[in-house]
Image: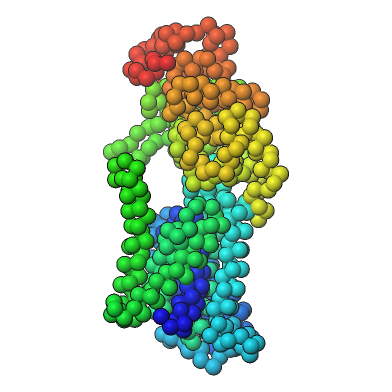
Length: 299
Length: 264
């Protein structure tokens, strides 16, 4: 694998690390299978691109994108806790609605950012090798985001959120307004995903309405690969694992696509993703049952 | 103080499965009284507790706690006044959180949660102190996930969670039913100690008549969603399990069919 492919994989791994964090919050912490992310990722990209094209500050545009993602999360949460729509279905409804909304925001299926100033522009010409520029910016954003999510989860409202996901009845008995916790958790989760979309659009030179397809699987892959690699259940480990998982997952994809023997091409990406996620899901179970057999227990 | 009037709860209303759980139940429990609640399966014991805690929708009736009408308060808001311990040790705590995280969750009951760290050094120390009081040696396992503890240990922690913050009312729903006799005895003794220490108005549902007479200061029996027996003071002190059964039969003209009530 060339060093360009390697750095490219790390760069993608970092930006999708934010998606991993978001999916960790909804799927793992809140126990809420939230497919809104397939819509909030292009929403973030679209909002940021539309604002940047209109000459807004790229960082402000990215923050606005995160805010838009938070609103998308709130809509899903509202459909679930107020209108009592099943969580999975509520998130699919928001996801579908966002497709139209994203077209409205961008005004057309894609917005190019070539020649526009992006979050990377201020760092150009600082002597940093061009190839490292974007990964470094992503790394900084991901580190800050992980720290903030950790602080959130370790706070009183964060503990209320985790209790809501772990056992809503006990949470309510301890005075936690579980409906508010769900709304807050989904807002933060989708804000992270939309921020990833905003940064991704700026690094790829544009936003596309279909850039969100399969994002939920990418996020889940990050979480699951992370859990496989970083055992342990603590909150801090969980968030770090999601980011690490995202990077490792991207490296694995890059390796698979670059290995000439396998003969895989870029269009096989989704197939490779599905196979990797399936492997990551089953490997821990296989390892456990083999361990049990060695210990004399039943498999 | 608990005052409930005309509590009516029906499950699966308007369907062929319609089951009345409470049928206009009235109950007054003065402050500091420890009431044990007995009754056969389906008598409405758990539903009564759920109605007081706010976990079940009422068809009719009012719930008053310490003079405040809480009938329309959601569960989380009532939590400032009501503490609960659930029957199943597996579902009475947050399994995937650590022991001290569960306790920290309970330490914030009744006040607004903020962005402060949930576990500070000071709180950790206070919690370790309280856990040491249990005498189970759990103070060295505060960082363990709740799921790693035994049933008895979890119920002890549940009780601690329920009494960590001042509350007016303590609701215990067969919280020793899933435990072995020795552990159950320990948890019951701990219950009595904590209830006395904090002078809590307590409702304890139990399946055992023996337990109902041996603990608390008053015993009520529910049948078909109403209170059919209410004994306290000297009358109660003189009662034994067979007397209780006879009383029930005389007042209700029906034999107790549930064997589980006779055991213990």
